[in-house]
Image (cartoon, rainbow over all chains, first blue to last red):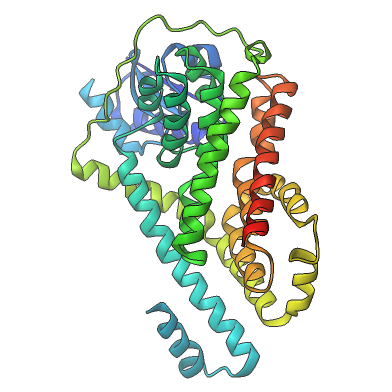
Amino acid sequence: MKIEVLGTGCSKCKALEEAAKQAVAKSGKFVQIEKVEDIQKIMEYGVMSTPALVIDGKVLSTGKVLSVSDIIELIKIQ
Amino acid sequence: MWYELSQVFIYNFIGLEGKLAETAHFFVYDTVKIWFLLITIIFAVSFLRSWVNTEYVRAHLQGKSALYGHVAAAGFGIITPFCSCSAIPLFLGFIQARIPLGVTFSFLISAPMNNEVAIAMLFGLFGWKVTSLYIGFGLLVAIFGGLLIGKLNLEKEILMDIKPLEIELQADFVRLSFKERTKEAWDYTWDIFKKIYLYILLGVGVGAWIHGYIPTDFITQYTGKGNPFAVIIAVLMGIPMYSNAAGVIPLVEVLTAKGMLLGTALSFMMAVTALSLPEALILKRIISIKLIAIFFGIVGSGIIAIGYLFNFIL
């Protein structure tokens, strides 16, 4: 499984990345986390409000900082 | 209700008297009233917003006629969230979906100007009439500013190569349960409130001080009929103040009550919200300085014209 955090570097994007890391640590699964800052790549996902959370290539949330428990839920469903 | 509560609190409970009591009463009443209104209005707007996100707006605007595009883009600007940090993906996303540059600007002008914080503050301090004027004229500036930018053929001023999307986007409302919408709206409301409540306290505090201690003549002379350049100065001063909109509006209210002309006040508040230096710096990464200057020039002159028009009519 691979989680990508899309964001151009604003404070909210860092907060989401941090939450994703914590969620992965709590879930106990082996998950790769990548921060995507390249605007061209972000556009390819069709995302317009950052930060966005992508799991295995699927955009699951845009424009908000999810809580750690929200992300754990998303990891479980996938 | 808040007025009486605050009155009882200051005069009977704490037992202040005279000018100090008047100032303190004004401070407590305004702060509590604005906090209450802010939470209510931000919650209502973010609840409505849970159906419509920027991705929806983009899909909706794709392939629409130019005039409809401008009007709809400006209208969507009222309910969609806007933060200058997502100005770039938003701008590129619109262009990518082959939405005309002018329509994109209509949205980019309207979204920060008609943000829920400014609307709630205006409603709380100036009442519904001034708030509707602000929104109405804000939409006009957004529609005509965008139309004008569209007519100037400035597409070559976009510095980044954007591959247009070939597909037709689907405009789908966001699907969520009632509970999820409520939770999301509340989280967002609380998030915003935490960021601005101190600014409001500060703004109302300075306002209360002006209200109690600065003579009306002084304010009328510099911001009222006595100063023909007041509107222009107000707009120039408003541009660098974006992040403090919540603190600035209470000040403007006091100045208006003491003789600042309403047109000048409206122009100032529009300049504070619509034009922001941080946003210009962010946009500089993807569009030329020339286009940014044209954008600021058109919106700035529009706002100044509205201010003079108002001062002339009223």
